[in-house]
Picture 1 (cartoon, rainbow, N blue to C red):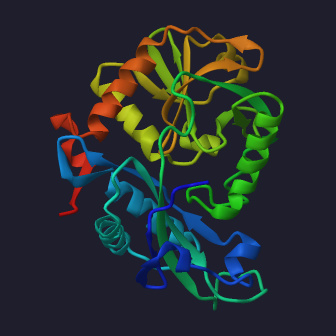
Picture 2 (tube, helix red, strand yellow):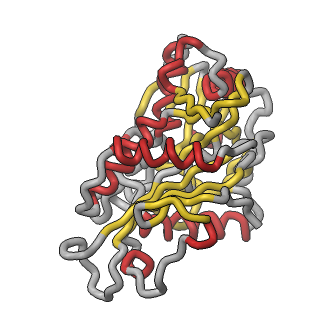
Length: 304
């Protein structure tokens, strides 16, 4: 059972979480015509009267872009203000996750994006580690990542996550923690809800946007951090066989943060992970506002 934060934003007002309910006839429930964001927040370790949110501006802009794909005009500034108010009203005392969601809120049965009402809500829940920080096992999924020509993969469209759900359950039910999806060209794309990186000979590599990946905010942050640390970081296509002979493999995402991969299929990966460990330590320092070089990535919200 999840511990949800007590206050939600729903239908343009803040209400108790358990009163924020939608109809069974809601359009988005039937057609996947929604889009979501996800960001982490923590109480500031140095100042208990503020909450720290990682890259709030980027998350809000991405959700605004996703809304545009649904023909919904919702500004990043509006999303950011609602999230700031949401945090102030809930005053979380532990690590938590925020889920903003845009959707077609009409009660109807015609699959369309025109002449249909849209809305926006926000809720949150307490969240520690989503995946084991010690390392996870992965299988190559029998399901393939969708293509941008049939679904707008630049947005976090809710309907697209049927593939992630199928892949995740297939992986867990066959004895693995997580799934790695290939794209329709047979190249590595991403995990069920995370981006993927490999390390070879002291360099890191990750699939580029042309591999039908989600434009991950943590992914982009990892690339910037690596380059600033003097680690060569390249976006390119990755073959399946490269996963098996990599020096290190890790997943990145808002929920996963940076999670090392210990095994892929029947190939065990090295337990010595110097680059993964270095990036994890740096990302933790940044999110806890302990790194002045990245101050502009962290948004402090007063909860006095």
